[in-house]
Amino acid sequence: MFVTFEGIEGCGKSTQIERLAKRLAKAGREVATLREPGGTPIGEAIREVVKHPPGDAPISPDAELLLMNASRAQLVQEA
Image (cartoon, rainbow, N blue to C red; front, side, top):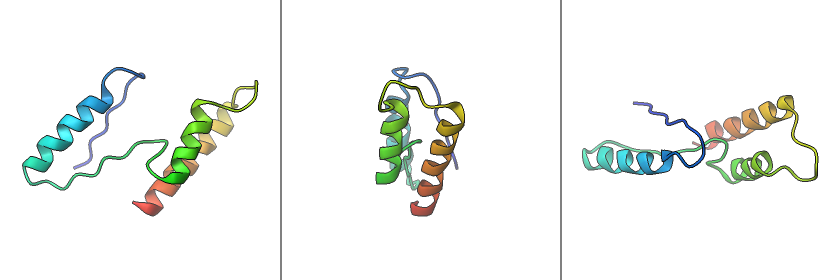
């Protein structure tokens, strides 16, 4: 089973993920919770850059896409 939660910041995704993970684990299911970008040390560093770009200029859409893909590649490799 693969479940995703999407939504804006502060809408309760983490709360719902935690509740569902506990319920599935209690039912004997194996549970892995991941987040993107993030989920690995490299992914967390990428997450920080995407959320809080250094300097005054915003990240270009192409650069952001590549960073997100880099984070996912690392997550797939380590998961």
